[in-house]
Picture 1 (cartoon, one colour):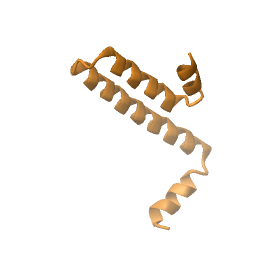
Picture 2 (cartoon, rainbow, N blue to C red):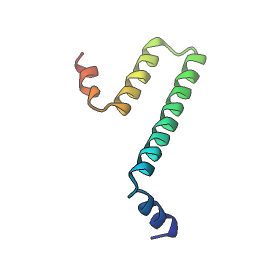
Picture 3 (cartoon, rainbow, N blue to C red):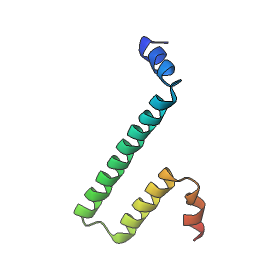
Length: 72
């Protein structure tokens, strides 16, 4: 195990660090998803593709919604 991995594991024992780490990680992922969607809109992709992309984002952010999207 590298020094970085040891340090990371130690930091993950701190609840405040875990909270900030996951918040930053989710924020980065959401920003990437929104940039992807903006690119598709800029390229004038069909609205069906945009809706599929949004549904995919929802599934990634809320896996429990995935069944509702496919059933609803």
